[in-house]
Length: 223
Image (cartoon, rainbow, N blue to C red):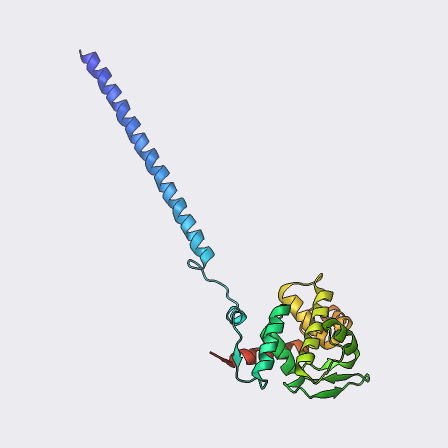
């Protein structure tokens, strides 16, 4: 009888051990599962910018891209500004950067003429160079182009930018492509390549002035 009780007691103790082991095993599994879920939630919050700081490029570009901005410091008619807005969107050119180009080139004077040392002449809002007018006129489909017509002049300038972008797109992308595009507008593709090779960066005096003018335009947005 005593032997039987001892046997039953041993079996009962084994059962208790099994239950305890199973309990702790389940606890450990649940514990690690909760840790994993917590980690997943952390990753999700980080990716959404909730659990960590985000690096934000603040220039209101996203807001600008959805509607034509009203800028107090631009002395051009509403029709011309609307035309620039439509054409820059059509070509994939930043609206403010193109206005900054006009500010840099002519200070928004459609009748400005500049005589270069090499004998060429720059005309109008975008200071289109006389050496490029014939070629660019064919590309925009205007036979009798008037360089003092703001609409013609703007189209010529945009087309020249497109040529520069096409030239550089196999070597640069994104912001760098935009920068070298504007640099080429100022000093040509050959001059730009020579400058970059010498200085190792796309940061000429013209580019710095253009950036400054864009920042000024951005500050003068009427909300």
